[in-house]
Image 1 (tube, rainbow, N blue to C red):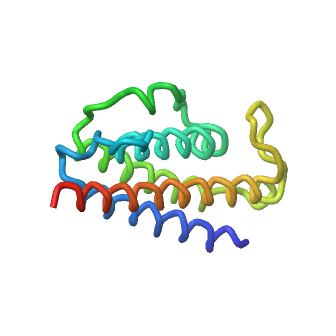
Image 2 (cartoon, helix red, strand yellow):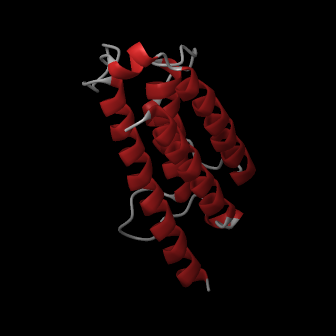
Image 3 (tube, one colour):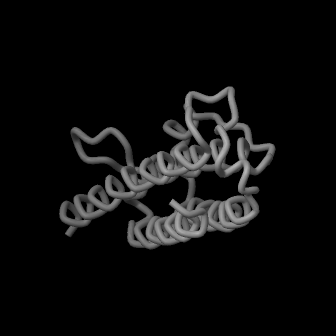
Length: 149
């Protein structure tokens, strides 16, 4: 997959994440129905943390320090703050991915993470992870709408 194509896919689906989050009423952002582990807010925080860590810190050289446990326990953040974080992430990823040297793109992903393979392979994996949780968030949002409606 070409760098430009993957960059556009990340942008498109981070925009979709923003659209989904904008449709979740504030009072439902941190709720999950019985049998569902994560709320929309938790899913959004997890995606932001994951991408800031694996793309921002490891490929972009940012100083982001991931606290994965906090992604799942830090509830009650206002929806507007979460949406702002996703927008900031989208802008950062655009620059990081566009600025990636072709040698880095084709080379091995940096060591010291559980992800292995070429940078390209890891980015495709991370894109799949984004879509997996985006689908969960979409389904959960619709479930919550039905219960409230």
